Amino acid sequence: MTDLEYLDQAEALLNLVEACCDRMNDDSDADIDSQRVGAMVTLTFANRSQIVINLQKPLQEIWMAAKAGGYHYRLKDGQWMDTKGAGELLAELSRQASTQAGMTLQFSV
Image 1 (cartoon, rainbow, N blue to C red):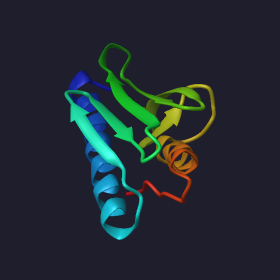
Image 2 (cartoon, rainbow, N blue to C red):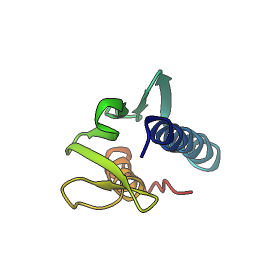
Image 3 (cartoon, helix red, strand yellow):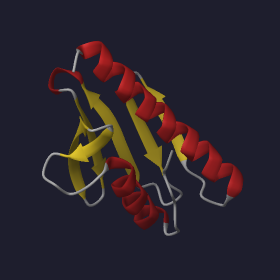
């Protein structure tokens, strides 16, 4: 994958995360503060816990840091998959965000 292809796919994922936060805030009492600075999105929940998602351009990865730990993802067959076999990024983000928010949250296309 070229650097440009990586950036296109990674930016699309960050945009999707932000759009999902907006949707959940509109449709529920989720109260997720989503802030983007360059290649990083920080989600802050009502209890002040955070999830940080950022691009790692030299490695062509996306990293996610949550209360439960850190995760690294690479694009494989159109999905951002954990480099240690722990699954797909949006599924793990949904699990971690639900735990930190204390309510079911779904990040999806």
